[in-house]
Length: 292
Image (cartoon, rainbow, N blue to C red; front, top):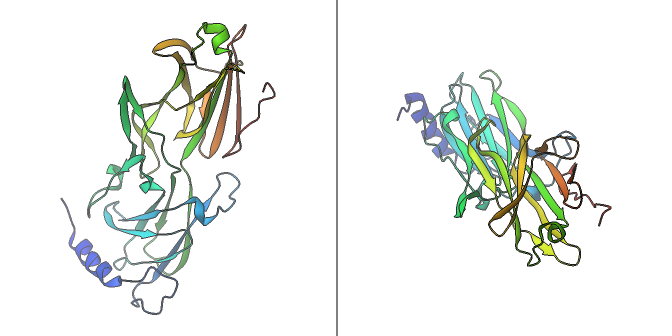
């Protein structure tokens, strides 16, 4: 592994920083010259979100050649001290909620390249391989020019996942099955997000839990997270292991897209001619279908 001499010197300095991640900066060394604060925002509106939305926050610091230097654990709104060797550019990637348990991520070592770092969905096997729904991931990045290491900066982070909820009406009426053993599989999104924010990896399928209500003949899947897929997802409807129907678009032929920081509400009515309605709402704001 390639580790430049200047990186070794910087790592030695970072070991001496000790308690410089705090509001009271009086005890920090004089050469800890750059201060950074991370804040979370809603996409589009730039509304600042409360600190409780992000429960863990990791800063991955790279040099101007995109080689990893060091990592800092912090919290939203906490002032953090950064240091670089004289004349060196810094590139910081911030990830929020990485450690909640439903995804894996690269733990880079000094000298590793940014383009080799990624977050990947964890999987499980049940007839086929499915992805776990990711946690409420946030990401942001900031490049600090070599001649701009003084002062305080804000690093904004934004939600990197979307969410999807699905309701299927008249399943028993159309399929003839009355045991309620229905499920859906959502295909396919990417399985990775690079530290650079680019989607990558293999195709991921999700098998979210749902509930069948016999009185209304409705199978409902509450909102679950998945990686954004703006080219559209496919919804397969099953009775036990038998595929009943595949839905690729709404009734107007539009793909069923999943946007970052949005909730996609899907209503599929199997009675008579197939009807598929899609409404995209703000994060966490479920749409109430008038049909119910």
